[in-house]
Amino acid sequence: MDRRHFLAASAAVAAAPSVLAQPAAGPEKARVTLGVGGKPLLYYLPLTIAERRGFFKEEGLEVEINDFGGGAKSLQALVGGSVDVVTGAYEHTIRMQAKGQDVRAVCELGRFPAIVIGVRRSEAGRIRSIADFKGLKVGVTAPGSSTAITMQYALVKAGLKPTDVAYIGVGGGAGGVAAMMKGEIDAISHLDPVIAKLEGDDAITVLVDTRTEAGTKALFGGSNPAAVVYAKKDFIDANPNTMQRVVNAHVKALRWLAAATPEAVAETVPPEYHLGDRPLYLKAVQNSLESYSRTGIISPSGQESVLDMLRKLDPELATAKIDLAATFDDRFVKRASS
Image (cartoon, rainbow, N blue to C red):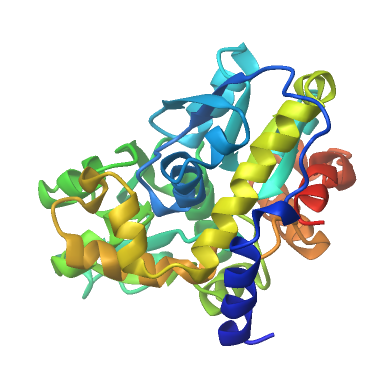
């Protein structure tokens, strides 16, 4: 299905909310705490849309969103019990299984990572590829987060070691822009709208761009799922109606985004998400629209791609027995779409 027909179909579905499966009973837990690592980032736009368009409230939920400095920190909050659900990178479900903890994705939000690696414009003549990154200071949302993992994978693919650069946590908002402008970092692995702002200011030269299918294939050789909704299996089992409603809200957000214009997105999100430059934010949204999931379902090839990436980076995962089927519970998203 081409994009024009997909958008038309999605618009028709969005206009008919009755197609979303409603749990027979009310939510076991009507107040849900949700962790995220950098909510203003377009990586997590479906979450903001679900919140701002009232989709959680439509599902009878009161969702308290706790925004952390990076995805690794929101995962820590889930493990520590301070949040019930996380919107974060799919890779975390694999890492947790290797550590003996059953954390499962329930809905895919991003089918491409949408992470961009760029180098300071003044250094572009000297640093022409990732192979030239040895010794650089690289800004990431937080060490251990998906932006850092993608940087590590790019280094390994270029023949370097993941430890050949210094990772500087700059957070998920304007901190990344400030760090580059102040000369605190030499390169950055980050997301829109931070990347769009740096591009608009002619501050970086882009070397890796996974906002598109072509860019994702260039780095990973295929699809590579990004943001998902995930939770501990114990919570999912104890709160199936709540989880169904959480997924319903995110599926509504994905359908809304499939038919939305950048202008509609900009009007929906908080004004501070524009980083003081609304035209550049509109461009960032346009650049990122291709990256959002169309179905909410993680493809098997995408799961394999992420596992392959992690095996190359983490010696503990290189030989670990991983059951990918146990990293994604597709029951809720299938019901939401039925």
